[in-house]
Length: 69
Image 1 (tube, helix red, strand yellow):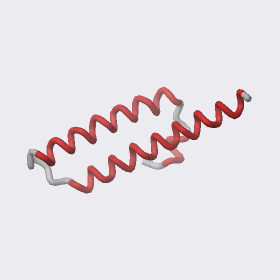
Image 2 (spheres, helix red, strand yellow):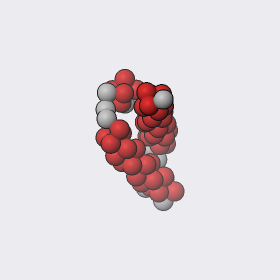
Image 3 (tube, rainbow, N blue to C red):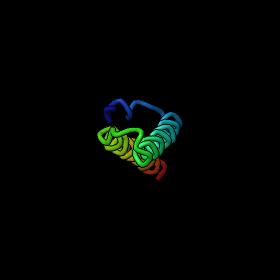
């Protein structure tokens, strides 16, 4: 997932994407603990995607706040 693609999405889509990624991260963590899934790379990728989405949400919120003042 690229940050440029995320910047083109509206805030409500970004929020739903964030929830989806958090659920996926939890599923991967549970499977890793239960040793049914050894895809540690996927966990790292999901964590970084969550950080990207949070960053874009923060950028959009700051831009909207700046426009209001």
